[in-house]
Length: 185
Length: 47
Image (cartoon, rainbow over all chains, first blue to last red; front, side, top):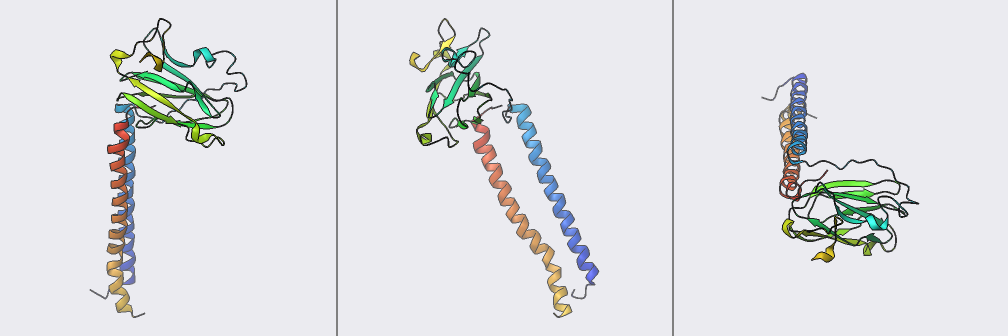
């Protein structure tokens, strides 16, 4: 057993390394397959939206003017929520969304970099001045969810949070103008 | 170093390294899978 030639040792080590490389290759392939499978079957993807907006004028007119902020239900039933993240608050501070329906969340900021996440969901994005961050999701559970700023944005950062109110589909009743707010409950 | 002793050690080195690295990677993959299946997927769709 003991008198192996040095070349034999090297061959065994090389064999082990090749086996290891094969095993790692299988693991990487399995992980990638799982990610692609999830993306295709369960619609879970990294949010990717590159859309520019002028941070100096976004509050004056257009999509992010004050009257357009909050939840809007389109004629086709699509739900869009528009939010401005600013030092140190979200406008509006409470977002009303229906349960189990596809919701489009759109964020932008006039000042510094912010970030948002909604607890208990996979919603998580940066909000960068000059860009619109867009995330699609569907809320499965009703109730109030916390939406804090998760990117340090200044001294008031820890006070910067909003509430996402997930309302049962049958109780979600937007007004004539298609607007919905937390006050309807 | 005695050649015989070296040969004896070298016979078990690849197996030992494989078991050690394999256990470490298996634990890592298990942790990833548990978080992926029990935390990430139940949190629902996003994109």
